Image 1: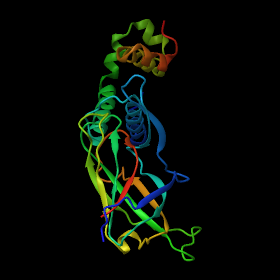
Image 2: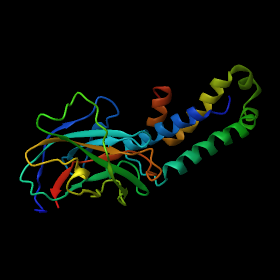
Image 3: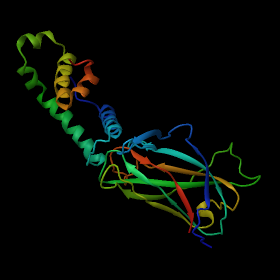
Length: 168
Length: 94
């Protein structure tokens, strides 16, 4: 249990049909400048990003997701990230049907400089908390910035750089 | 010109945050603090617009519509931000 391994394989990054963040580029400071592809989550409306993932080498523990992000203009205050999982079980989950996502959240303070990253984590316990996602199965890992939540008081975009998932 | 309504102030709020996000301008204000600043600015304009109009020559007061007087104010203020910003507002600034 709890192998510590990167058991969440990201197969596809899929912006939903509506309320998706903007895929944009943030330039680095080197010469030539790096060009970082980031997802810019709005400060005034909740936006979502889906990852199609596979659980590979999973040993029955919980999961910990890390969300590297930067603030586009803020250097203070918090943004609220949430992650939810939709298990795609063999011959059981109809993707044409609606699913109610159950989010686990984290409030994270903006890094002290706009070009710096923060690495908050969102954890799931084994079982129902992670929609009983099992070894070898696909799932939608849905990520959101809950910008209208009272705890999300950071002005400006939150820029997501990626998603990392470990068994813990 | 009338004071902005709630919806219009929200539009300014969202627009400013998106503008500064694109330009990566550092803004050390929370969302609510920025919103208060927008309210304060709009209220100040409403309180002081008569004083602004009075500062203009009689010919200008007569010649320009309320919207044109507001644009005149905005163009001068935009130039104080930067030449490039003024260009976005009124076009080429030679």
